[in-house]
Length: 298
Image (cartoon, rainbow, N blue to C red; front, side, top):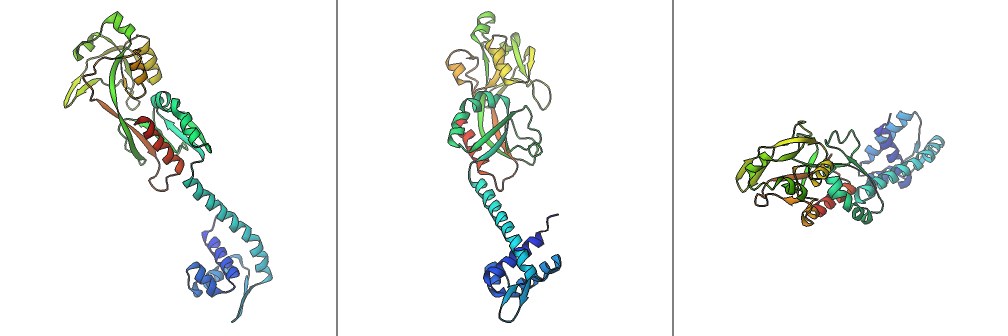
């Protein structure tokens, strides 16, 4: 088992040998000479070896102490190098970044722009896992997660990245066959594509918002999906009306592949959050990824 006191004693021994005296070692370590002496005594008792010969004028290693010191000095150097590398990883965007991402965000927002992020940080390796639920970020070995919706009760740090509009859309093919609802009440006479709330297992309720006015929609559906890609595909195929996030769909609206049915009801918003384990010592790779998400969703 790792003994931190043993490592501390070895560090004090190295300072004594390098400084040539207890006084110089004490100055280098910010200790008193008596504190240095006690640390050496504890180390000698711990390993049951006399390491230093002490006189009123000098301190020198015993033969056993010299052999011990020759063995541990390279180990101290390795520990220092490891600490330096770890500190560098906290400041440099490199290594492996494991991301737990909402499927919708991954497919329509992050995926098409990921090349820019990777070109920006060539020493970074990316692992993306698309899941409907955030799960246990720490147990799953994830560095960061991105999710829509209000944060659940969790010990994770949550940072809101943006808010996106919820829009009600249909494909021209659907409108041609079934007509376009002119008022919110008309939605009750149309086929809808329901999306499953992963937290409850039930379909999300539909509503429209304009300022402080909120209208709950009566809806009917023969299709329930739990994947944003399927929602988009079935809507584009003309199978029904869908409520989706505006983020990632602008090109479909601009090209006419989808029609915003109620552009005068623009105020239903849904937040996007990044989650990570701790506010302290956030790795540079996590900070860089979160900043990039803000950039591509702004």
